[in-house]
Image (cartoon, rainbow, N blue to C red; front, side):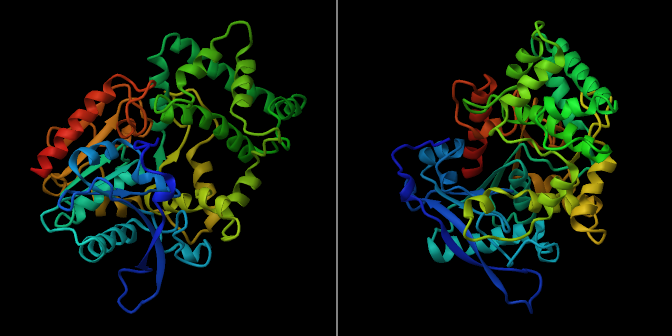
Length: 451
């Protein structure tokens, strides 16, 4: 969401920083080009530096002219700079994304990238005075990095805003779907919507397991092939649940996003059967007339694709799922499952999610959430290390259960009825009422940090 229309898109360009491949091996002198973008329009030469952390995605040039922090930068004469995460977007570390070449994709390396870059940017590139404080911002996984950065490098980062940051590395992330159920029940006719979701899911399972009706599911949902086994079924059911997950995360952020409320308004239509309403939603979310390939082998093949085609940049820049899956399979877990009874979806359990890791990366790649918890302390970081971190969480965000949202010893801002990263989006016609109050509270925390 562009904040300052006076800045033309061609005025902000990608720049390149020469970054080390491995910060923790003094004998390794390999480097790669890491992209960054700058917005210096508001900086008066003495104001603070807003360091925007880019997460598991392509870094758009608009990242320094979007979100609420751009408005605050205008008010505080701040210099805005955003650094793209290694392995994502155009910041290629190795010649491809093969499993062996992903070994430098860790939070430790990413945080070191940030510190090395900040030193160069403030001391060499822009000659930022030592009196100018550096404030980091990030949302979702980037919010996690923003918190880690301030906790690990307090001499460099004066203050950190960590929005919707999943800090607790859990293997079985069943709470994700529980929050979606809770959010649905807050809606008018939410209980009816929930019951119809369950009814539609049960009907699908019944038809899939009936040899005479399995093919009907293929035709009804426009699938490219029949559901042949439990892995196919799990892939399909997770894809259906993901429609609701997307609405839960991004509804009420900016105009045009589908919300849980709009989906439930379809699901409670008594003139149709629940499965028919499900189908209406399914086809409403489609982006093409092609068949839907939701088979397990196709999903695994897509995840295993590791080639970098530099001539097909848009495809490469926006398809980051393999890299993020690798991070989940090695450091975080975050495996969203239907293993809880307090949610309406079914048939994608923890074994299914763990099998994906094995089938994509092999048995040599192992998950160690215990190491991540030991290194960063999850939702119970040392008070002294977290004293300059502001944790922002939204009550209807499916990731909120992994964030710090209840504690008297940390700086916390809660957005009531907000969704994923609600506080980062400038107020618009679909914003929930509490966003304005939360943003004012965050701004006051920033003012205190600067003073």
